[in-house]
Every structure is written in C-alpha cells, then in structure tokens.
Length: 193
Image 1 (cartoon, helix red, strand yellow):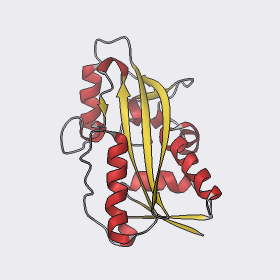
Image 2 (cartoon, one colour):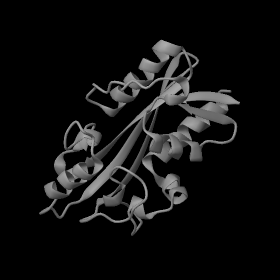
Image 3 (cartoon, helix red, strand yellow):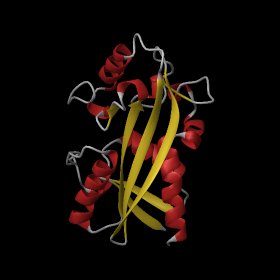
Image 4 (tube, one colour):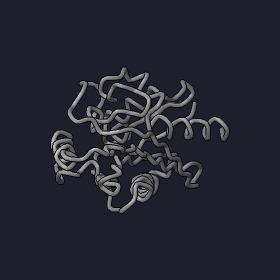
C-alpha cells in the first residue's frame, strides 16, 4: 500500500483524487494528519504554488506528499484569472463571485476560449517531481449544472455540449485537467514503487 498525503484543505479535491487512484494507493488529507493551517500560496505561477504547498508539508513531516494548483486561463483575458483563479473576485475565495466577475468580463466577447491547467508537485523519496494536466474548452454565457465546484458550471470542454457541472464525476474525471495530471502521477507511482 502506497501512503500519500494530499497537501490541500479542499475536500472536493480530495474526493476527486480518491476516485482516480487505484486501491493500492491510500490518499490522506491534511486534516487526517492534523494540519489545519492555511498553507501559503504566494507564488506567481501554478508550478510555484504547487511546489510551495508540498514543500510546506514535506518540511514538517518528511513524508511523501503531493499538492496541486489549478488555474482557469482565458485567452481574451491574457490568461486571467490564471494563478489567481480561486481569489479572482477577492480574498474571500467565493466561487459565485469569481464566476460573476469572469462572466461580466466576457460579456461582450465572442472569443470565449479557455483552458483549465493543473500542476501537481510531488515530493517522493525526498525528490521533487512535477506533472501537468490541461483541458481546453470555452466559457459558457451562463451557469449550467450543479455538480462539481469552482468554475465547473461555466466551463465547457472541447468536444462536449455539457459544462463540467453537468457531467457525472466519473466522466469529468476521465477528461479533466486534474484527472490528466493525476494519471501521470499515478503512472509515476506505479513505476517507482
């Protein structure tokens, strides 16, 4: 059994990853190991934030740990909200406010192309490894669906007519940015254990 800590306080992310990993990998949350700190995200890139979060946990516990950072990058907004996706509308990290701000910013835009990008930083046997997952799509003109979290109700992946929030989680995980990065992580773990 591979024991891994997922360096996040977001229960939605933990649930999503737990659906993806095989039974041979046990994922534990920060709460499972007694960390309730708000881990800093002070870098100006997704890679930097993912590394910072993993480093924070690794430095304290010397354990195998991974963290991720995800950004929604909108073409016409020069990649915004990007690294600031969670706090796009302010430090309160409110998903509804973030979506409202983004929809308002795109109100008169015909180019609604966007991509979700996830970077996972893994400390494995005291060495750092990075994995990236991307899914391209577009921003809907209004919210659609009630599943998922974050920007899921307004993101429609290429080749689909549904938003992420309209898809069953199993289907979303097969094509999502986090799912793609997690597949690389899992392949790495299976090859290195």
